[in-house]
Length: 417
Image (cartoon, rainbow, N blue to C red):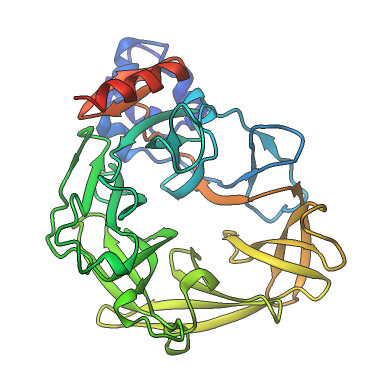
């Protein structure tokens, strides 16, 4: 690009470049690097053409000790297009027994417990935010609950649509409802971490969830809201029926609200049989009936005054056992995990497939795995580009950590501060 062109013209041209070019062009000049890494540019960046949507797939193949990450372009060529193997950054690879909390604006959030034992549930809870497109990740120490036998911590993740600031929501609540009467205060019931500040704080709003609400780990971000499936344990009766509901968290105003489920799902056992997902920026509830080998897909309609649910379609797999509905493609087709009817899922790997609601046709995606599949849609983004590599946030400070053992030492040190 000619140096004679005004910088404003150069900036307009740079805004239209794909992300891979932007990463390389940081090396052209200090001015370009300063522009590309600025928060304003990162927040406003948009490609000149509609960005491709991708599917991130994580699975275990039974042969390696580490999970495998792959990406495929979500378009009409599926399932015939080529998968791309991903090499996660060290902060992701260092995780042991991690689960994926959620995804938003091209970022993925994982969580696990860090400690000498390396066993789930022991050690200090850590969250890692990963930008798949630019291969960058940061880690955030999530303070443990004061008494692990009484309290339990849930997390949510999303990006504020107004500020493009990634946020982690931490919810600490009573683990066993029988302890509710003896516990008068829940320390740090809700805290919010923002990447821009690097610290945990109280949410803007004071309308926190009721003490009787039990969150589940089923979480999804849709159109600026973070949603969780939940149960009101105060309604639990001897027949083990409980009032199921959805809790929403506004990513900008940081306030909680309750959303009622379809009537027949409210008392349909615990929420373990339900799941929630994002279908074209609409919240959907997945009601799976394992005995009938079907899953009913319900879509939430929001007219600004009230919210209602409409049944969209039913997923049925006559020749294979439907294990889970994992994600929805850009076309609206669900990505499902299935296993042959005559096979033992303990010994035969499950596989990923695409279900076409109109034709009821099932297409194999070509992924075979043992253990938990994770599938998340994402688009390319520059978020986290302005963050230093190997950054770990703990106790309000950012540390540069280049060895996994250094994280263990950091956690031991900060736990004493």
